Length: 461
Image (cartoon, rainbow, N blue to C red; front, side, top):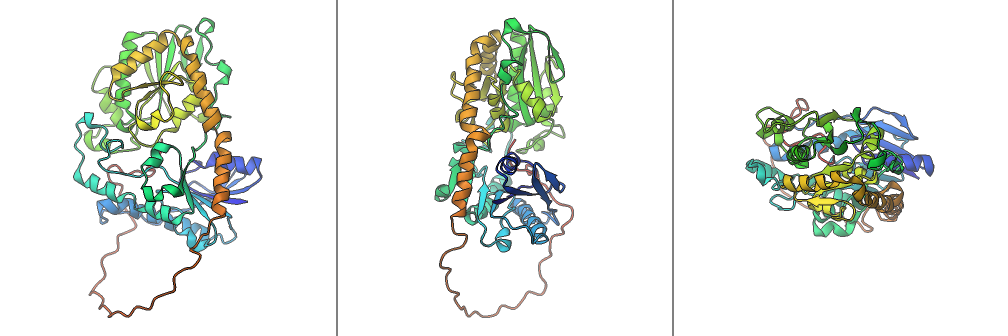
């Protein structure tokens, strides 16, 4: 079996699955990506390059689609130059449009698309209108763009044999007409990396000695709180977290809060409201924070991140109703007690008081109250962390979801790739239309435009 994965980034959502198939099942796996070519874990990376992209001459609302078409073009050209590559199945991330043109190269090869989000303006349980508390006025043009952002996603929905989505919340956002074509299958947490280390890194309070966590010396009497986000931004509630963290430090002085991530904005359009500041800079300018107790350690590698999460007494996670971050599931897999925002994607995973805690997204006071309760007696709440780890092991680990993924692959292979009886061509007689005096100007492939709120990677983190 030869599976071809397509994603602009490597390893993204597919790398750990491809590695498992290549090393354990001896399947052939290739990965078409913008990452440099090479081979790792038995996976050949085929690099594609963009020859163009959206420019300022494109309408603001069509630039996302223009960029995805150039991804389609790059993937198509890279594989056309490799005629010896003949997959049995194509698996690609929708949204970038990377698999759309491959039907021309592989007309008989079924396609599985991975979907993450369907944009719905003015949906109260979605990302655009959730942060009313900030008082930021959303420009009309962004609502208009939101209505156009699903263009490539809809083409992928039509083109693929079957698709899958990580959570039921995310799946619920897709049009009803396509629901029969979609399955809910989580990406899969790699338990070889994210696990509880048998409680060795988080011993009972009475047995604790000096520890070093994320490069920080932690004396036995200190409690550890963690927060992880790819970018410090409003979509992931960074401002709410910081207000909560300040309250926690005031009420429980013997605490070390470790913040992991980068000072960037991955989603939304925060930068349009900050007068040149990053969201982190803007948040820190709103109040005084003890940056000895709240330490920013940057981005760390997965193995170290797993150890930090397995050492934490409490992990705090917030998100607006949007794509669920890997970091929350990784923290649960590491046995952390997670205190999450009571928003739809989080509530799908956390049952309050059973395998974690929930707090109102907009109430730092509630976050702080519940956090301090855990920090006062971490041992009492260890059953919640163990229940979280068990849930990941049984339902969301790579070992748990891989059989579902393989079943999906096999299902796709049995599906027709073209209509069984294509309609006969109809001859149409039409009056020729005289060409215009000059064709409209073709946008330059240079100086690619990335408008506010647009990102190289529109999903996940």
